[in-house]
Image 1 (cartoon, rainbow, N blue to C red):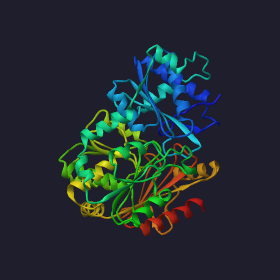
Image 2: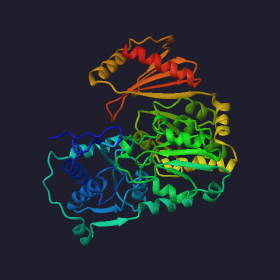
Image 3: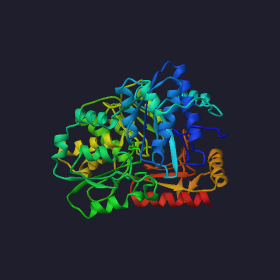
Image 4: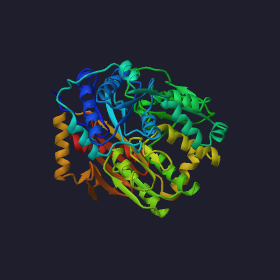
Length: 465
């Protein structure tokens, strides 16, 4: 029996190793028992483009249906935000997404979405975990039987989502912009929706390939070389967007084919939402996001808060307070006026609309950000280490003996979630183990890209010896 534990964003495991039909049955049973205890009678279920998505989604549906609960199921693959929005639009009590998001193609996963249209809060996830049986031995109706008994209904979650986009964006202005947009779906679940929303976009990897051609569908620069080169070779392209496997994260490129990280996107969103759209609210970011978000919030007279890493912590605040913009370093971003959920397509459309309505290039808008908070650069290295070595580094961080990284003297250490070593002058290094992968992440910020690389190299030498 495998102990099933939800990480930063859901339960994830390697397909056919721990991620099996039997274990999905167990998690689905725990989900059903939690729903019954909490008076929830209906769930929305969807899956992304990963291998076995339909099998695992139907398995979850059949177990939940066996408990007498109604299932609204997507036909074909959908993005995580489509399921989250579907929960709200159908008045359901819960959402289940079969996805491992940005993880390598060998993984699958199981995400839980609240009735508010965002991640379940940590306390509720712990309650679901406590309900997961060691073995599921209950009844297992077919989908046809469920449909005949009124326990299964297929819903067009993608169509519902596109209608929501059409009602909230100036698509006419976006589509008539003077520049072209390139979109890399990374073989993920955003491909069909983006093709319909922006029919003139230049498309990459917008076909169904459950193996993602062997590459983790994470929208970071090292995985997006084709998109960068496409933009460099086509001067008419003014913006590049990429989404991860379940399209809740975003990657972005400027007209020169340079990667624009999530910190810069967050700052652009806050600038657009407050200065141009005249909206207000709280700014909420995770521990690994640049402190320049707090600086801009202060300039605008807005309250700000820093959370642990994981969008679920932001969603928990969004459920209770008015949040104008929130997000995490890994590309999961959210804004007011939508569900409390990270949504890579929605955020991409926000930036496109910002550019189209102002007539400014992405670089010009970034320069406007710099005029307020100063220029900076950021990067992250993922170190694949033996577990023993990873834990040894974490233990050393906890005992706080690192006083310098090469020539950079540590001025302050924060340990909200991971370990952030600040050196002054907008320079810092952060060390944190991944919550979903066997990886040690090392993050760095400095005034320019060259110094970021120098900081990361110094961190490697100090941490690895």
